[in-house]
Amino acid sequence: MSNLTGTYTIDPAHTSIGFIVRHAMVTKVRGEFSDFDATLTIAENPAESSASGTVRTASIDTRNEDRDAHVRGEDFFAVEQYPEMTFNATGFDVDAAGNGTVTGDLTIKETTKPVTFDVETFGVEEDPFGNTRIGFEARTTINRTEFGIDFQAPLNSGGMLVSEKVEIEIEASGIKQ
Image (cartoon, rainbow, N blue to C red):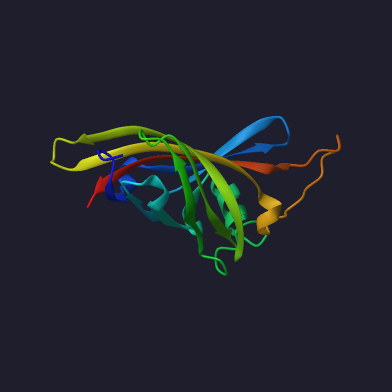
């Protein structure tokens, strides 16, 4: 891990924190959050690494203003009452290249549940401005109802307007401090 070790601040200009949810059981809606911060410290012994991040829920963008307003409201994120969601890593099971899993506590609407992200690291490079950068992707799937996001609108077919399953995708670039 020696080429990856260090503390990195996630660069919001080169990072995407997004989600995918099935809508009307026939298509997928994608969205992302634009206001967040995160820090990742990679130790020589990967098990001693740490990561934490905070997302401001009001920064949601699904490319539809009406839907964004609904998702910010009481049916979903209730951003006035719960302005942030957080992640704090509790375990790293990664190889020397930084690929594997990261487990941690995800908190949404004051409900904390363990989640495991599958992580793929793309290495470390120095950019043209002298910054040392790490690049990685992380993915997991959660059930939104387990976090108190339990809006249900039944369809005539028996399905729901918005699936309970939500895929979370992070594509990140971190700058070594």
